[in-house]
Image 1 (cartoon, rainbow, N blue to C red):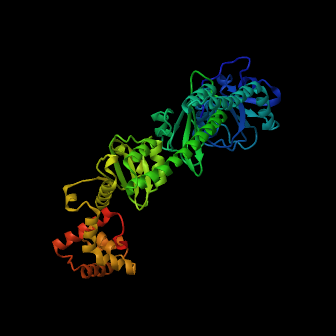
Image 2: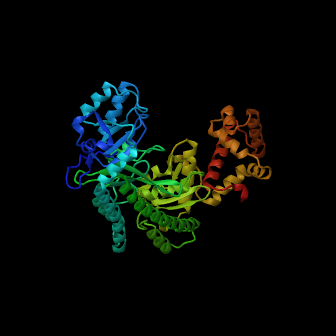
Image 3: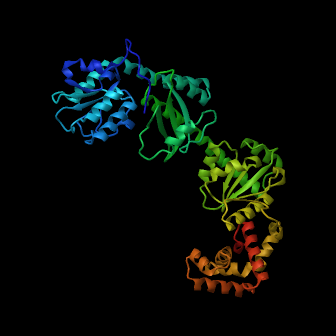
Length: 504
């Protein structure tokens, strides 16, 4: 909601409430607020809401048949105080129509806040009052039109000159009379060089509620859509050293911002596809170190710095991860497979975690690209398994010394899986069963059969039968500590391999 200081009177100043009262053909009678008659009136607008403020820009004359005027004295007081604080020009109530009696509390509030309240003769249609205000303010409207056209002229000139986008916004600030800020729906910066809004604005007005009007005290928040999502928010805050050009100008600027965000989205999608291909080749060991360095540099990853590979649990929205990292300016390669793999600078791993939206994450040790990614992949999958086991957000390899109990070579891991779980995996493959999953969940629940059965959505007797089958197929007893340890390590080896051993 605009709250600019009252404009000074001059040759092109808007008409005032005093001017309108002095026009007999408008049939206006002053009810209260005489000390505010020099308030300028830039527009006249019909509104039948008890709180019209969010829908106005400032310096409008609110016209009502009375439907929006509350009947209770205290609500009438609040009705006037809201509009006065928001620097609405005044209130015009239709005489002898639908308004409740105007109370002493309303009059007192209008006098105290210097907010003019007038009655409009029933014989004078609102359109006559609106046309009078519009005609009287023709020059001001023309000035605003020039500002709107200037915004797009500035865009055209800046495009021809190759002006960086942050500089383009600064030029538009000078035209529109606002300080411009750009942020995500939660208030985070999304474009380098363009500031996010002040903390106070973020705390009071973000995230935006669905259906919320754009006006806020001292400016506007305009949503910038992209496809079917909100790509960002343009926050325009009035400057004390300039006359603001109004909501329409801010919406024009939002259109320019939307074009920039759409262009950057396309560029990110290209980088994402290229990055996925590069990471797939790196994981497969199908690219030589020299080419790997070149590809990393293209993606913004310094090939001379240490990297870390992250494995994010399956089912995570990889598009949201990519967008969140890009908005935070974190270079990365991303590849969705059974898990989502992320290649990052080692020193950027902590900063990347908020973009992963609460998903379980396993992080490898830091490594150099010349070392290859095969070992890093096994480490990341191992760490991810540990994060799942402990219901933790993040795990790093090695988290604890127990990781040393497993071999690191894929062939050795596969041998462990075949030796211990081979018959169980084969039974699951042939019959579409869930023996391995049932064993895993039972162990994860510390062998509490009833809890594990609830997690699996089966009866406890069904789970008991499945566990008996595991014992029969493996020749191991679930009541012996040594056999349990073997089964547990085989499950961990299966996780580290990151594939279904039954397919091997």
